[in-house]
Length: 594
Image (cartoon, rainbow, N blue to C red; front, top):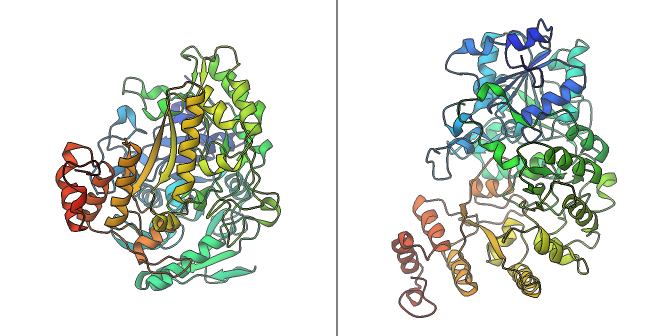
């Protein structure tokens, strides 16, 4: 019987001599014992803290008895939908059911329910009344307050209301989950655990005995876009572990209290977490089921940092991981690569050393960890802050040492880089060395758009910044005799983007000879600034009115314009140009799109 993994059955618990686990970790993903999988990460952290953790992966939710197969835990259930939001995992932005689930056996759909956190929690409440249920992971974290739900086109209350759970851990949960476990182990009722940073708890009616802000309640934000934006603004501005205040919001029948975010792990603590005894493998129980495709993306990659001070409006990282960046130490990263290189199936290629943004390694400035992130200023937008620490030297040194490890043939950087941050580091050889050693022909960057008004709403740099980077990149590549290309990520139909803006982007792509392989329609997920704009038609921080392309037809027109050269998009592009009054872009001339 394999004891390398966390147990997934009573038989595996018996081999370990357990009568019952302290915690059962219920996850919507298959069990892969790799630190890129949140359930494995939290399970190993609790194990290191002395707790017995069993994993109930992808329980068969149509039969509540499946929730019983690991028995009653001594302290409680920890519930997560998995690495992805279950609704994003299941549906494209157009509402089409996806054909693959990369976190399930064989990549097959059907192993988890929609709104997995809520479904699992309700079943546990029914089967094990009185046993603590604690929510965590991305799906729960982004739904901790009343929020706009794109899939039902409604405002829903906090997931704590609908799920019936006792407590919610938001953000990166290593420190809070151990604190919660310790409190439960000391005999505290989950409803009395009210002091831990990075948690949301249910108030019995009393207000928290600390300085706090009261958000507009669920009923208000459900009926008023102005109230919704006011609540979001307060959530957004207090999302800081140093200066953030406790927040209170009334739901339908309960009151949710959010404690300030948990401080980011120190470099030493982050190293310790990533140094835990992960097998880095799929659990053997999935043998013969086609494997778990998601492991292929991370098996030879290294997470080098966490957090992002880029603060793009459409990205949920700000609301989940936060703006404070922590980078793992050089030795921690190199040791992981040595371990990887010693594995028998390693082919010599490290697929990535990166993170949310590959070239961020630490706090944006010296004040960030002592005073918090600025409430009314971003680090890179609309231009880099004068206090921003711009330095690629540590990252370059790590990359250089990584490629010299015995058995390593090539080290790639496949995570996105912030090109405005690269340009701000004027004398650094970073771009030269990146292209020379770490790009496999194509470098991913994310300009997202070229229309200044849309970029302002996205929180992205002006088009001339990307254009400067593009020309710099081409110059570097040309000087080194390399054949490399930029792969720009673009978003269509973002709030603020009109048909004229989409045409402007198409013309830019035509003029630069760019043919993007990937184009993403804006996807409104809970917790982002852009989603608040999409729902209310207003910018929640400024109050300005924002145009929102909502209809399926306009979305399809904007998306088609970004790939105007595809024969299957011809009819849609013609329709868009006629509607926008741009017949000059049709025909056989050099400026024609179609």
